[in-house]
Image 1 (cartoon, rainbow, N blue to C red):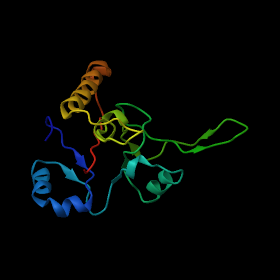
Image 2: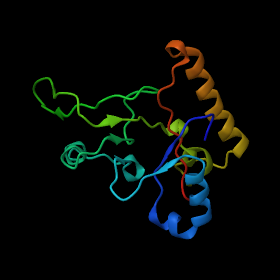
Image 3: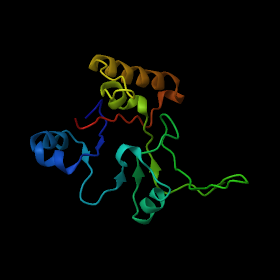
Image 4: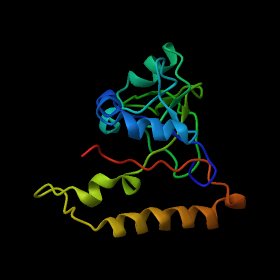
Length: 157
């Protein structure tokens, strides 16, 4: 466990097949790997379409981790009807709980080099310091140090 907290791992099937001993270790340490009937969802590259929330509700998903509506607090996203000539309409909160993500807590912008797009090539110590500093900020500034969600995203490469 991480600091006494069980975590949920969204692990691709390829990783399960390729690294079975590592996966067994994750499970042996009390963590959950999204299993046969998924309860949660994270969209690839956080590409969340106008239809995604409705589909997650239809298939009774409990949580999603693809949106960035808050920094450290889970929330229930609301569907939006966009109007060009009048205010947008927000629907009721979804039964799907959102565990927010952040580009700052993703390793791709810090480590991947894409010419003309991402400088990347930051040291792993720098990435860890970024993540630790974010945790420390939340711990010091959230009410009662209550960090309800901090999603760290790592790429498979």
